[in-house]
Length: 132
Image (cartoon, rainbow, N blue to C red):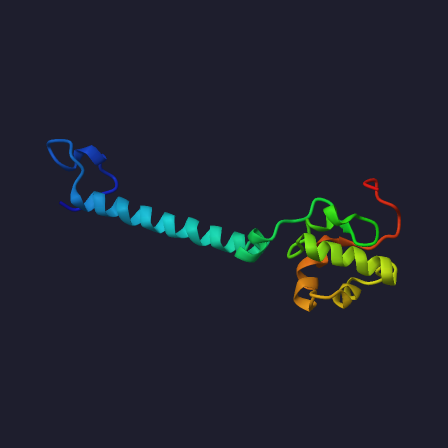
């Protein structure tokens, strides 16, 4: 039986069942709507900048001050463990305060890639922190 949109949908057969033509039409509409919603979601996520790299690296709630924070705070930086945090504190004692984030590259075992990972987490003000 041919689907006629002006007819009542339950009137397509005597038993009240939906015909295969009507079912096929509904499935087609469902596929079209699903594809449209999925495409819109992908476009929206692309526009606001969601990607796996943004989801993996958390946004810092507070910055860690390289010039005043103790080694226990420096451990919160990505790629910094207790040994490297102690090396940063020792370097700071010997050479004075860090002026630029790039100065962190002079600490042994810290390279440019590690500095780039930590860049958004670092503060360089010389005011004393509340932790000390």
